[in-house]
Amino acid sequence: MPVMTYRDALNQVMHQEMERDPTVFVCGEDVSGGAGGTSGEREASGGIFGVTGGLLPKFGEDRVIDTPISENTIVGLAVGASLAGKRGIAEIMFADFLGLALDQTMNQAAKFRYMSGGKAKCPVVIRVPYGAGMNMAAQHSQTMYQIVTSVPGLKVVMPSNPADAKGLLTTAIRDDDPVVFFEHKAMYGRKGEVPEGEYLVPFGQAAVLNEGDDATIVAMGRMVAFAEKALPKLAEDGINCDLIDLRTTSPLDEDAILDSVEKTGRVVVVDESPPRCSLASDIAGFIASHGFSSLKAPVQQVTAPHAPVPFSRDLERAYVPGPAHIDAAVRKVVSYK
Image 1 (spheres, rainbow, N blue to C red):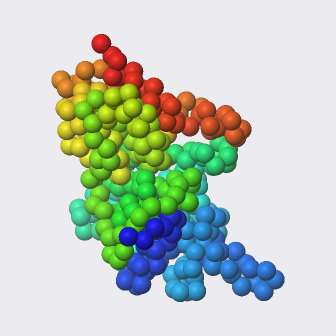
Image 2 (cartoon, helix red, strand yellow; image 1 turned 180 degrees about the vertical axis):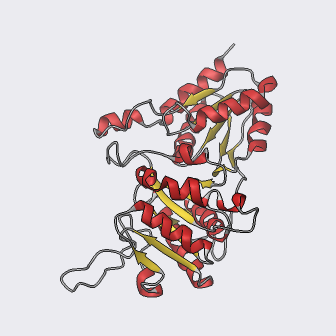
């Protein structure tokens, strides 16, 4: 299989799906790229993170739409067009700005199928770069996935590697329901093998990336990579863990979680968002309600602090949950008597 970056895998999918289906279009701030030099021609670089690069010259301005700096306009355009037979891919420059489009996302897109008795569909994908670790400060580094995961009617996707980025985005674009697709900013350059041709990863099916009998680690997004880094040192000391990559937080693969909990009895949930009303607390509560008889220790939650993301590089490194935090949590549940 070819090796490519997380960014290039996402870009490849948009090229392939826009070629395959003429109803697919992209809209967002600067998605076609800025003006190059003094010619006034757009450079087609593809937005602030380069994910939509090369789409403009191939598909034209009718399908690669630069919008005003207005998130409610971006999502409203994509949602309205998707109701009318198109398939919109709306890019929000930073997850933090989802708040400006919450009415279009949670009150409109998420509700159309339910309120129409299944007669209406809204096949829109809202692509959202998220997360800390890029020194972008408190207003450009939040997670936000915990907020939209709580909204019925939205599907929420968080790929942790280039192959899943390709497979999950393809599935998202072809899905007839609204999907909020979270891409971690610090992972755009991550490389990995990616299947060639058409490749889809189904929603609601977690991936078990490592197997062990001593503890279960449940992680999502960038936290999966940090959990993988923690595994070798734990294994050196005879602690072998199941590592579950959720892939999607709505739908959630509850069976994969409970099956692993039944096997290990000890659980660590790793979540980049702050602790209150987080995915970690939601999953810990789910395990306590449905897998309590299997537990041999309290569920440990590894999260960011309940604080804004710091701008200082050193403080930001301390803020983001990392391999050392995961290692300590696993050792705590394993040693619990």
